[in-house]
Amino acid sequence: MTESLDPASSSPSVALPAPAASDLAEELLGVIQAVDGVTAVYPAQPLWQSIAGAAVAVITGESMPLIAVTDHPHEPVVKARIGVGTLRPAPQVAREVAQAVRSHLLPRVAVVEVYIVKVGT
Image 1 (tube, rainbow, N blue to C red):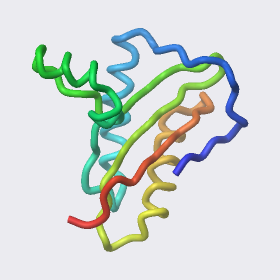
Image 2 (image 1 turned 60 degrees about the vertical axis):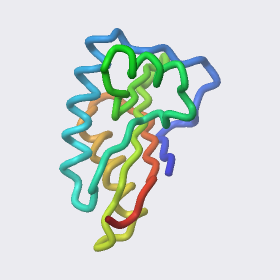
Image 3 (image 1 turned 120 degrees about the vertical axis):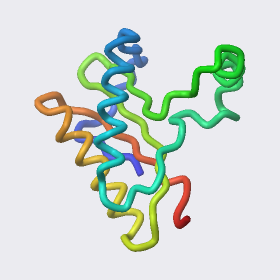
């Protein structure tokens, strides 16, 4: 599910500086995990889409980032892939995750992409 407060621009994305992006990603991971109904958070980029990243992760022992944060000229873009339980409707959980991320980033406006990749245990 992708929700944007503003129309997406066609300008290319620019990665935030590494410390800023990783610190923000860690903060957002906690925000996302705190949403009722989220049972797991998966790497933001599936391994099959990032073969080079997966190879580097294997060699260095570092894990793939769970939350992707990139910066467009006017707003950050956050991508998260989650698993949800069966007690709450998955679309509702995804909307709540997106809203929690946006609230955490205030006063900045953010584009938040939440993908549900697993429902159930």
